[in-house]
Length: 334
Length: 287
Image 1: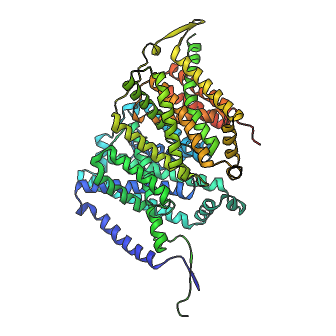
Image 2: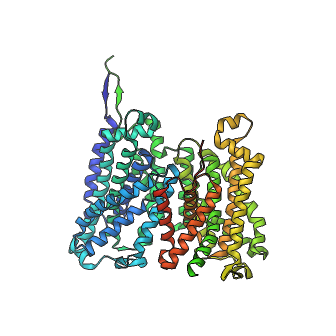
Image 3: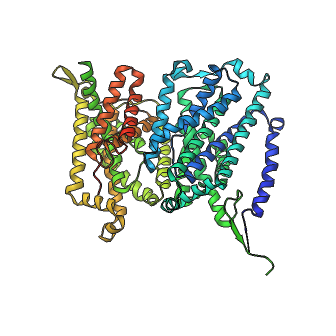
């Protein structure tokens, strides 16, 4: 008997993943402008979905207000570059730090609400953010503002290079988020988090500080979500309160991605993102019907297969591409 | 006098918010379900009222005779058909299913009625007013407040003086034992949702007479109702009315300072209550 964490499927997945990553890094040389943009958007949604999944699927913190941090990050990019004079790349890191800082008082207030009421509380907070930024006339008030041309040019002189840089940053953000979630879940803190998810009472009696573990997850998620928000609006080059704090764009879609792909797994958000964009690219012409279909699919998945597509695959084949748990392998020779 | 006027108008506005909140509070009390689609159902009721008025030419308040039973039936069907399957120890299914429902209702309304703002016309009732002690009170806001008091008083009486209320309290206390005593909890939950959407129907039609609405107006209504529930204290219906009034007054006072501050002032009042009294101002005595 031996105990192992990895498996053949995981090793094969790692090799294939590395090859795919190399192909994706080279995308600016083989993909057209529109495709590059789409890929960039896919990676930013992948990052948002992985972050929301860490909160809802592992920490039990169901938020319908993550648009608060997406919009906050976007606005910080604009404020730090326009008024702070920082280069955009530095401003993105700054947005992440400020996002984590602002999340501290937010969490202290919202953690007083439990379960589903926490969810609606996060939405109220996002509304407070939206209404507050709409009051700041220096950032365009309710109608928003555009990123000045000289700041855009400071990224790179030619448009092609700029778009490639934006793409690489989106890819980098997605990889950073997935790696961070994976490494976090393999750490002691991650083990504590999964123990809380499985049985809060038992975890507490083993000496895990439940409040602090969830608090850390919330703050880290907020910071990274703000970073992704900054990247989203670096791609868009224009920001307004309604676009920045849109519950549909930054929370509803993200929730559908995670639910359809499989909540509480690292693989789920990846599969969900691919399914979401495949649906969007084929059904987008249908407009509102597409959203109705998406809502129906999410409800059916939640009722009939609450672990999503990846949950079905895992139940059938017992594989885990991102090995988190340990498994016992009986010796082969006898 | 301006300030007194703002407080009085805010109090009356609070009646509408209490109506948004009462249905939310009811189903949370009976089955611990938080319905994210609550606001969208209010807007759906407003559209239903609009359609009934357009089809029959009746006064919108008379249209309630149709809208309330239709919404109630919808609530029962929704609970038995979908939401009962989501109830259990896990928090996620009810949240995510009602969230999906919210998106479906919003987009179905968008498909059916376009994004143009609509309003239910109630003729003279919209502008009628009377003078009390130098203040001009609109008949509609006073009527709304009176209906909120009547609805909450009615729910309170129902909870503590009828067989249905006893069934609600029984499944709320312990589902398994209620089941053993011969109550079908699926049916009881269905009745609770029917009642909740009956209140939603009244709230929706009154909302539609008071202001214009569009398919995306649901989220804000959910938030107002939710804030009224939390300010007042979970599980206390009269507290919910007080919460609605506090929210309404905060909004009208905010609007008095600066029109851009109306909604923000309401949210800030909510956050202050959350910071100072996390269980609300009038929590139910537990135990």
